[in-house]
Length: 172
Length: 180
Image (cartoon, rainbow over all chains, first blue to last red; front, side, top):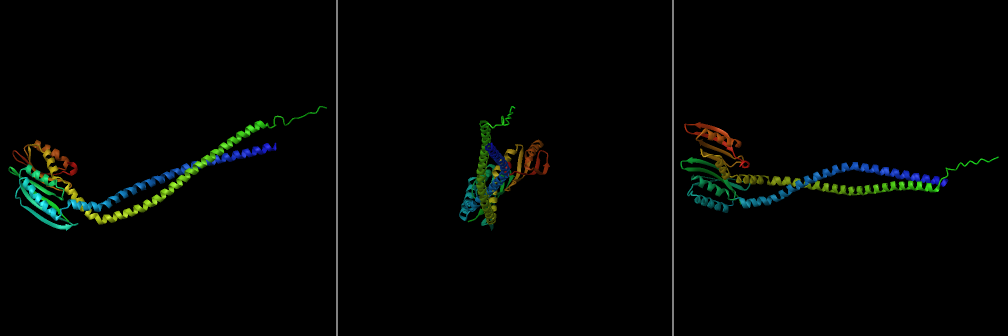
C-alpha cells in the first residue's frame, strides 16, 4: 500500500512539474512574441537608416565622379584658343553658307571667372526668314559652349532684319 | 456465536492492473507535457540565439554605417565647398546651351494664323523664355483667337492700337522649355 502511495506522489509530482514547465514555456513564448514587436521596430529603424546610408553613398559616388565630369565638360565644351579660331571660321562659313556674306561682327571679351572667359559677339543680319532660321539652326547644333543670348527680329519690307547677341566661353 | 467478518478492504483493494493503467496514463500525460516544454524551450532557445547573433550583426553594421555615413557627409560638404562655384557655372552654361531659339520659332509659327503678322520679335535666352513682340492683325476675331492661344503662356498685353483696317499690339509672353 505504501508503495502505491509513493508511486502516486511521485507521479503527481512529475505531472505538476511538467504542467508547470509547460505553462512556463507557453508564457515565455508569449513574452517572446511581445519582444518580437520591439525587435521588428528596431529592424525597421535599421532598414530606414540603411536606405539613408545608401542615398548618402549614391550622392557621395556622384561627388567622386564630379571632378572628372567637370574636366570632361571643360575639355569637350569650353572653347580653347585654338577652338576659338575654329569657331570664328565656322561662324563665317555658316554665314556664307546661308547667304549672309561680309556681315560685321563685334567681339567683346569679358573678365575671367572660374577659369572661363565670356566673349559677347554681336552682329546684325538681313535676309529671308528661312535663311535666318537655317543659320540659327546651324549654330545651335554645334556642341561647343556658345549660344545665342538674344535675337531681335524686325520686319523691313520684303526681308527680315535680325540683331543677334551671342556668347562664347573660352578657357584652357 | 457467529463471528462477523467485516471485510473493510473489499472494493478498496488496489487493483494492480487498474493502478498501472492509471499511473501509465498519468506518466504519459506528464511525459507529453514535459516533452512539449522541452521542445518549446529548445525552439525558443534557438530563436533567441539566432536573434542575438542577428542583433549583434545589425548593431555592428549600424555602427559601421553611422561612421561611414558621417565620414561621407563630411567629405560631400568639403567637395561641395571646393566645386560649388565651378559646378554652378557649368550647370548655368548647360542650361543656357539647351535653350532653343529654333523650338520657340517653330512654336510661334504654329500659334499664328495667316491673318496675323509679326512686326517685331525679341527672344531672350532665359529659363522662363520671355518673348516680346509687336504684331498686327486684320480682324478682332483673329486677334482674340491669338490671345486665347497665348493665354496659357503668361500673356501680358502692353498696348494696342486700332486703325481703320488693322490692329497693332505689343505683347509679352513666356515660353519655357517645359511648355514647348
